[in-house]
Every structure is written in C-alpha cells, then in structure tokens.
Image (cartoon, rainbow, N blue to C red; front, side, top):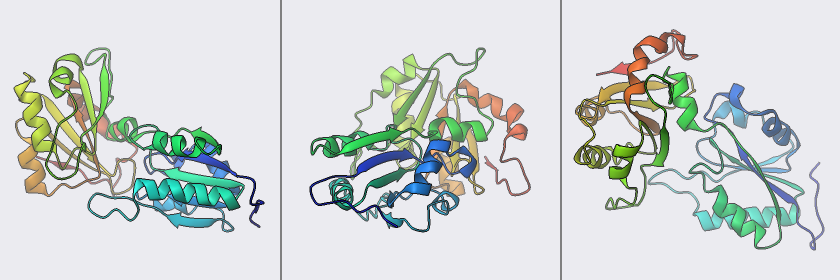
Length: 267
C-alpha cells in the first residue's frame, strides 16, 4: 500500500542510478529502494530487467527522453517529481548510469531543494566505465594511459556548436571517453585531428554496453566515421579514444559479453 502524505508534507525523493543495463551491476541500495518505492519515475535508458525489479505495488511512470522524441521536458520531469513528493513518501527517480554523470541529476536536485523537499542521491555505475570494461577496454593502464576524461558529445540541438575544448582534450588527456557522441562524431573527429591528435589514434564505439545486445566497432580517427556510416552503427553508444583501445584484441575474450550472443562489429 502506498504511503500517502498529508497536503502539508513532502515525501523524500531518491535520485537513483540504475547503472548501464546489466541488472547485476545495480547497487544493493538501489535494489532496496525499488522494493520500497511508492512511485518510480524512470528514463529511457533503464533496461527492462531492472524495470522488472520494481515492486508490484509501486506506480511506474516512463519519463524517458531520447534524441528527437522527448516525451517530457526537463522542467516537466522536475515538476512531476515535485507533484509526486506531495502525495508519496518514497519517490524514486531512476536514471540510467549515474544521476550526476551527464544525467541532469543536479538540475532536478536544485529544483526539489528549492522547495524544501528532501533529496538523496544513490550513485550508479556510469556507462563511461562499464561499457569499455565489458568490451575488454580499460580506460586507464600504467603502460598506456594515466589520465582519462569523460565528456559529452551531445552539446546542442540543431546546428552543432562546440562548447567542449576539444583542442585541450587532444593535448591533455591520454584517454577520452565520450557520451552521446555518435551523432556529432564527424565534428568531434575533425576537432581532435585539427588539434593535433594523430589520425592513427585508436577509437572504439560500444553500443548498448553491458546489455545482451552490446556491439563494438573498432577503428581509428581516420576510419571511424566511415565505418559508422557503412555499418549503420547507431546510438546509444560510448566512444573511447586513445591507446587503451589497442588492448581490445587482448582483453575482449575475457569480457562478460563474450558468448555466442555477443555481437562484435569490426571494420
């Protein structure tokens, strides 16, 4: 039974990271909240097996936002959380990956706290670490990379207007991990190569990382854009740029996804 509140009080909102998709990577704390939630408001990247863990008594609301077909604006989602906190004691905002890593959790927290609503963040494993790992690519390695930068490749709608300092990243980070970069990949590759990053620099794209449908595309700055077009490789995908990608050939066979159902696309 739902824990209904009086009109004068608010429930507590939990911003919960669901991880990248594999239900085995969901934290124990997150699982406990799914067991006790009155309402769960989830985004489009939460995997079906994790959605299946939600208590049968909880109301489930799909607030998924995907490129080109946003079902709700960010302001609408924040308002929805506020409205649900007025009537429910335990409100779970379930996000793919981690709420504070390109998940807009900070925006939602700000809106809730401004009204005095109690909020707690439950971190999740972010795709920028998990997807490369499940492909057999370590984002750092003492012999290959001592620095890694996580960056969004989806900076604007319509015409691409770069705000990320790709030139600085090209010169300052040995591994670059890009979220939501497939649609702007051509621009990103141009920015990095113009900044002096060698065209031979290895690139890996990991689509639907940690899920049964995971796919990889391996190439270089010189080839990856054409490979994406030829293979019709689509989002959602994480891009990994740097020498660590060379370890793919060595470590891929040890990946949790290395099974008869493991799909690998290589150019």
